Image 1 (tube, rainbow, N blue to C red):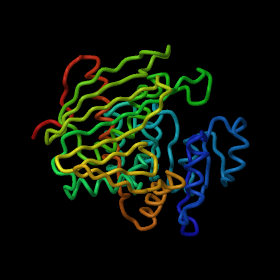
Image 2: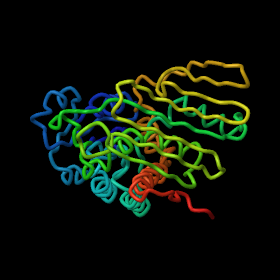
Image 3: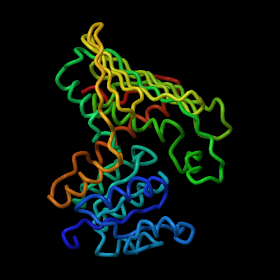
Image 4: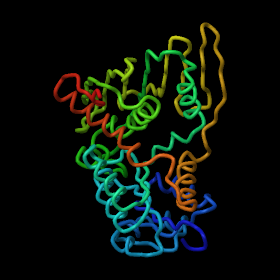
Length: 336
């Protein structure tokens, strides 16, 4: 590290880097934005100038050869996550990779193996794990405040139909993105599910394109059984302008509702008594993730959440797509 600071290289200069990742690095006291890596430096000149990195690279190999790079944030289309992450790990860099972790669980597992073999840190950008509202739900579940959990409902409806030539439209090509609404935005909710409860025991899913003309799915419904028997329903849609984003967990003694998921209110109901708590999200949702990872490097420890944690959501996604193709229930977490 230079001057005691973690020197970051960000790979990709899209909206997520410009609006969240780079500002988080610039704000984090143990970090410095050392390099931006993009094949479109001329096109992205204004964005890069605003971020003011010390270096601009058009080639990842040259970036990884630079001994001044300590950590790499991979923010490219999903099909590049595995090869770029593995290359960075093998070059001796610590890596945070955007979600979903990879095109499939096999790729994600190879990324985890590379981190283990090289002794480098690997984390996936499931940043909601650091937010107070989701941590508070985790604490309630761990304490048993809800009693026996009997139902979890995940609902996300929005409208996504970009121009095919627009930035980010690679999400509409499965070979680049891994899938549609399930892979792109469902992955965040499935990660929370895996964090709170572990992998589901089994699931069945129906994944289709109902409204739009693009080849990836715009609709998915999923029914899951958790290892202790609770039922989970998931509804992910890119074809409804009646936006909603909700997580609802019901137990024998109480229930908790996050609606909207990323809002400020957490509603807890015990019997017929309802309590509403204010739990604002961070000003920059990525900051706690970047902060923990940078501090992990400075303090020579593991980040709070690692590659194997991020792999779980990808395992669920794989099972969803496979179940829909085969029209059957599939195991996700085999019985021991």
